[in-house]
Amino acid sequence: MARGTDPSLTKDSEWEQRLRRYQTVAGRQSIATFCEAEDCSEAMFYYWRKKLGHGKRRKVSMARRKTPKKTSVFRPVTLASSGSVSVELPNGLRLSIPADKDGLVCDVVERLAGVQFVSGE
Image (tube, rainbow, N blue to C red; front, top):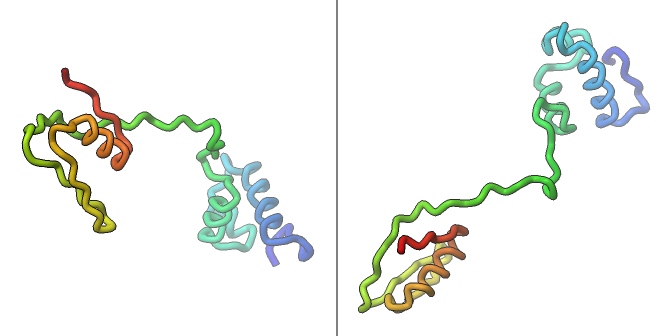
């Protein structure tokens, strides 16, 4: 059994304690040396550190995370007034929109791609 572990602890709480012990020696001891002293593998150390959120990155609440504004990767296009624009979706559905309805074409593409068109006018 690894040093400092209690058989009544769950794996989660056992690793919580182990990761807290590592935090006290992190600047002075390598993970390899720590794992050897704890009688655990480095792979398990990294697995549990990631699983329990003890990594170098702090987790940010989704409520506080600011989503970066998507920018268009499309170039301005001028549609001919005759004909239509066809969009085929991955599920096989095909949309055909009259080309003179350029506002509708932009709305459809914006919603499908999740981007906003910036008018070049």
